[in-house]
Length: 172
Image (cartoon, rainbow, N blue to C red):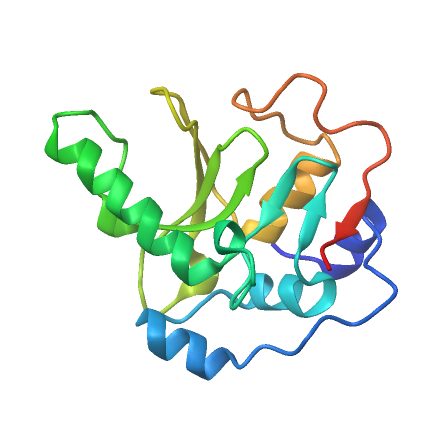
């Protein structure tokens, strides 16, 4: 379960408040409700880099590579392309919605179970040019907190991530 105080102990939020997000508009354009823990993360941290390695996609980011809606379209297209060409995927592309990415191009997805209950979605992590996929039975912020605090280890990520001290670096 998501615990905002525990997450803040792992990585301190930035000093300045991020720009507000119009969630109704974002969700209407995407055609799906988004998890409340993700909204909390975006509202408290904004766009930026966790531990010098992992980005959370941000609605309306000026950087297309970090824009939630743009990246969702791109990653869905890429997954469908691979599936059409016979690549084995652990999930149907329609059941995955990207929410983050690493400096190495690894993509974090929500595994959409019940579309009307996004707070019950789990997490899948896929490497960009390989068959390795890992899953976590919990929400995005719970997963990120577990990774950054070293409670869990994702084999896709480099062995030196995260470092002992984890910082959040806001993007301008």
